[in-house]
Length: 207
Ligand SMILES: Cc1cc2nc3c(=O)[nH]c(=O)nc-3n(C[C@H](O)[C@H](O)[C@H](O)COP(=O)(O)O)c2cc1C
Image (cartoon, rainbow, N blue to C red; front, side, top):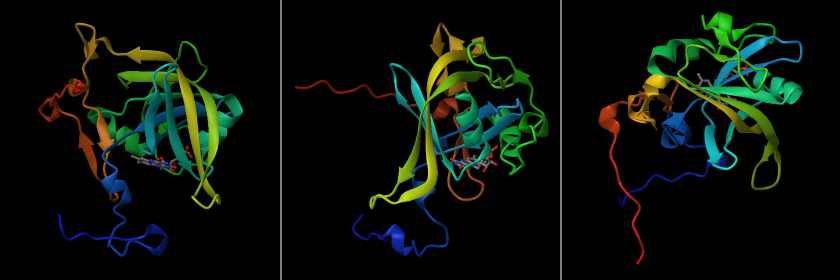
């Protein structure tokens, strides 16, 4: 790799498409259900999403702008993460429409809300895995200069976990068989986890 392309993002990438989220990819999708203070349901995908801690389990996602999901979580302190899978890909995509707050994206995407056990926000009945979450922190992101961005990192503690029995093989969660979808770069790229993607590597012991 002796020839390298280099750019400083603050001066522009100089390429036909910004490679940033194609490089940091594919990313898991935070398919987040919430409701407003008045009870209007909301569902939207967030691929600036990941898990950050085991005990307690913490997950988080970034809202680029003050979107309905962020506003709802500020109001209720709760959200549910739902696993997006290949059979649910089109519904996940439909749920990202920039609909006004009074529109319920469950209805828009033809999905069924199922009651949660610990929080008041429903999960997606069709999704094989859901995490019920209580918001732990909302952080307004800053650049290196300290200047505030218009993005917020929303973190939540997972307080309830639903897993379809079919994805528990001898009690082991079957990631390879889950048909989880991940977001690539560009306007339309996704990847699906399939069993042939799996390889195993154990950590080295030292010395
Ligand atoms: C796969 C996918 C990933 C997305 N990731 C993000 C993200 O990380 N952050 C964000 O602000 N918007 C993201 N969006 C766009 C939001 O889903 C979209 O703005 C949506 O309308 C927000 O809904 P809300 O206002 O109901 O929260 C993504 C869209 C798709 C389809």
